[in-house]
Length: 384
Image 1: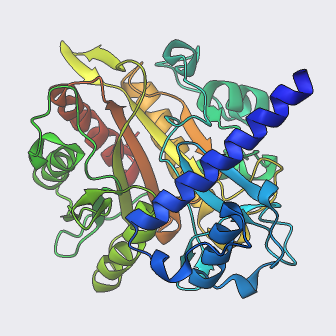
Image 2: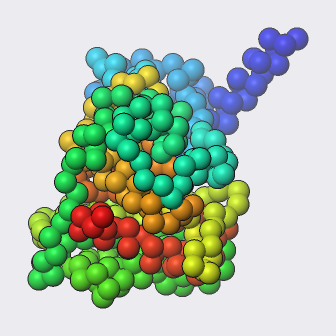
Image 3: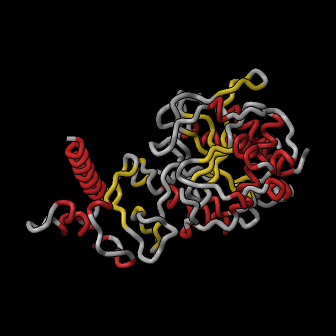
């Protein structure tokens, strides 16, 4: 009886995956009518045949079995084995961008593959203190107090040598005549609990504009704020390839402004409750720095998402975390580590920042930018 139930559940899952994949293709305006079902083929086989014609499948193993169709979160993608590669795992989503597979789902831990974080636990037990190098060199101490490791990835101890991370020079000279900092938003439509629908200034883009203003007017930096809507496709919200869509835009800005040293992807996280703390009498959204390790759950490098600046990224976020803990106890959630790259490879001083959640108010998010700007200034200027 139990085996029959499992079999039925598996079949239902397959049928749901097939149906969702077909709907995805229909919504994407793919040439479905040219590849209607053949009477000799099952529905699943027809979908696979269709995918094989649309995508350059010759780069992959051609014999794809139905069991390799799985449902990933709420979106269903066709998964295939990559011939001759073990680094990418046995199955990968098909997304071909300029001839390369590239799919990075989610920007934090608000999807079904990641746990809901207990904020109290995520704050760690040591706040508002100065830490010694000897403490931080203890990997257990470092991981337990400063990091949340998503189950999609596995940490490599060689990347987390605290002495080396703290010795990396993250300072930046103030040369206001040339752009120094880029702020952008992979997910431009993220809003807050009291945001007015359709009003950009009430979204994370408006929060980014305020951060840019503080860094420019109060701290003297030359800041570019990119408000491009990388998650809007043909007028509709579509975050599936937002990181892919953002990369060319970021690259263009950086090529036109090679003096930019700091790149900030500002987000608002999704969770089941707000993250807020009172700082100097102001309700303030808590912040979280986020790093992609380009490493899967087995500890294998995801080679097609190489990041030559990975250690610099990690050093930058750790130095920001330490400074924030010192100046604003309770403001920062532990740094979050996940499998992919999230376009943090564009500069050594690149960071993804989560500003509160969808339960936080816009004012709470704005208040957090004053503190984030102060923390950034201290690290970038080398202020002790």
